[in-house]
Length: 265
Image 1 (tube, rainbow, N blue to C red):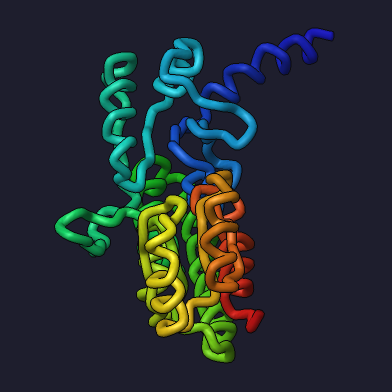
Image 2: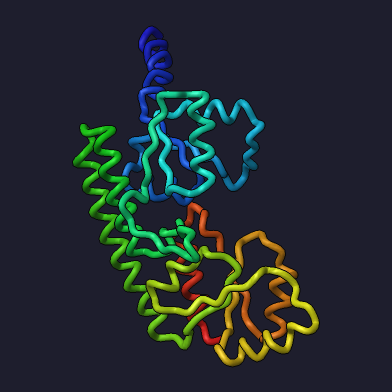
């Protein structure tokens, strides 16, 4: 009985001893988990099943109570960090995109580097080094997972490359900067436009443009208005592909995206 009481008293202390890390999106959680596994405890701001509200004081306090905030240097993350510091001035920021060269579009930095599996290698390296600096006693564990992840990424990149090389896809239509790194890595053209219904006098020009560039695929953000995409696709006979770049299922999502892009229909 006394042993049971000791164990029960010890459990909360054991849980509290874990390094706590806050991230913004599930995809960031995924990358950290690949290397840290169960050696850290991760809190995620935007969970799939839980709508985040900046007015939720209980959740803000919990998120800011982490020792570290791991980010990909997204614009909203700078705002979150300032908010967290008002609650916890000791919170340390780690930028997982540190020293990674990023695209600039009309002078604006494109932060969505994880759509390029080669650049994810650099993200993994940063995470590994950050984790070692925090928990040097687990260096060998982190290093083994890091090397395994690099091998997995290499195989994954070759798989995606083969899929695109053996297809007739040369580009796609998109309404966000999300997929620029994917297009650049695999030498695909990405055509961008404003996501809205076309006016009657714009339809003919849109059809001519799509035929000239042989556009057969339209990529849209998950949970965005599907009716607009259907209207646009209907004009040019294109296939609509939904993709959530922030999902925890980074690998399977990217694989499905490339597979759908590569299909001939």
